[in-house]
Image (cartoon, rainbow over all chains, first blue to last red; front, side, top):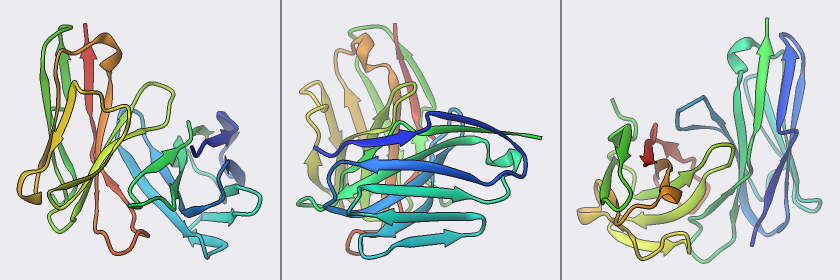
Length: 114
Length: 115
């Protein structure tokens, strides 16, 4: 069974800092790796999706990398802003029979203070 | 609004009662997913549909849980004889299946509290 771990569990930084959030997974036979953002009491918003054949994806101030051989992904947030405060979750899609089940980590709760 | 819609947003019930949740996916999306999330945890997969076919179910989906997606449009998740351990946020998501590398679009969830 795929297990996804995220470190750190919580992070508090001043505005303007560059951040790295870490995600590790136990089974390297993934189809893709996805990063989500979740605001309190809300659903999830997809941020980036990295296909198994890709090494990284970028969207604005966000950059996600994938190293399947080591079972790791990182989310890099440049020039953090208070509006970035949220929980960030990574999820792995396994090469299962129907490609429908995502395995999520517990998330990193990020607080960016002005 | 073309997002994923879930109803109700909050549900409080007494142990032993039955509850039903509804999810309306983005109209052109053929895949619909149900996840459950408890406080401080990541979402856990329950089940998903492609059109009207239920393709996979988690072991978390005990015989008290049933999900349907008639006609491949909206979906319902029913929990019979609720237990306190069923208290959680129930999240619905949809996606347009084109091979597996599609982003999921989540609704705001239904928060269930079982007293």
